[in-house]
Length: 137
Image (cartoon, rainbow, N blue to C red):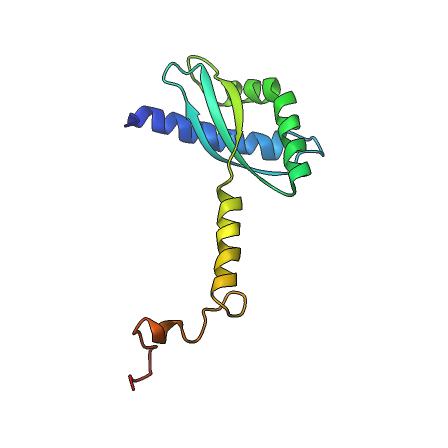
């Protein structure tokens, strides 16, 4: 179980790192990046930063190269915005949650026929449910 203080530190670092990547890092090679999770070690000396990157595999690799090169700059900005005893060193990890979710969605669309964004007509009937305003036969 994570202590409440560490939860607050993690959440604050996640918010601030997200702002730094969106506002302060001006590298045009940086893709659309979202900081999804941060885990700061209990001694506050290291932080694991999970980021989700929108784009193809080449764009993702380039984004991680940019993040690795800018690690010192990002750390110094984090230290100036968040008051901690130590400014943690940063390690970046790829969060594949969005990719997995997209793949599951595509598989579901293949298995359950229907138009994009609509539930199939016969799904409720098979499960024994009726739609509002309809009577059971």
